[in-house]
Image (tube, rainbow, N blue to C red):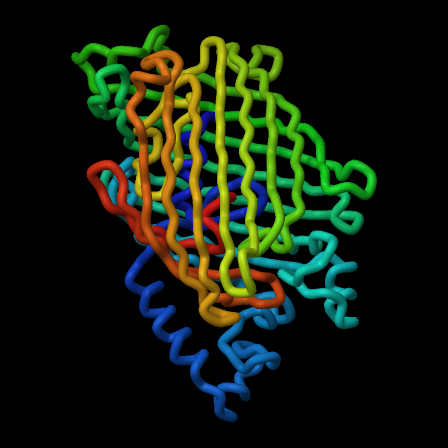
Length: 410
């Protein structure tokens, strides 16, 4: 499928758990909504408590838990896209949550709630999301995602279907942007099984991306692209190994999430090109005190064989244009410090660096990507552990804004 599907999904406003990045660009209506949240949170009078669907009986604050879980509510995520890779635009995602039966029974009986410091990772909710976006560069995309668990979180399923038409830049050997168009249909299917009573999961993942690419006519191809084919099918089959000890899948305060994946793209799987790819990423959240949380992130990607240029690993950081730093391999590290100002509100600062290398550049010659910034979150659904907020970031020659549902690390 390539990393550009991740870039497309990032603008759709939909964010599934366990490693996927969705919904990351702000809009004026979202800012206004959070001003309203602040006002509602400060209200403790009878009028605010009367709206039981929108308040939490535990603290009287504005909360959507009951609306989302008990009244078939949908969480909208409107988006103003500011990603330089595709230009400015608008997007909208809709998220529907439902609780697995055992988790719902535990919550009803007063068992440990999501986000509590418990020895076991709480069973995550089932999530269905649909979203779309369009930008001024005529880039667009639409997608559907579903995440589901069975048997007390012993089986985890993730499915994604998306269609994109993107106007992007390829930077190549000279690090100069060359515009190209990427159109395609993508499908992802994954099933993971828990190993015994451990926190380890293992299972297969299949990724398919039917792509059409084209650069401007009457111009030579960018340096660094070898065997260019306009129509290509990227079909990968692989094994995924996950470790998950997070206390909450959306906005953890403690625990580790790690994922290791090895993929083969072969003709027998439907691919028009053969290559191998290995990825590994890990996130750790360390509570420094009752109000401070330190987050650490490491992200790697390696490829061999005839991998299409648009599918190569690239550095993904807040403040860095998607796919600007792209090559056969990539290494990324990021750190984040969070201050929980109140049980509902938190502010954070972050910074990271990365390199893409292997084919176009050696590791020592490859340019260094960097991004840093600040942001805030509001706990909008306590029973789910869902937060919403905004990150503001600066990278090489640019600034960016992101609407975040939960942590930026997925």
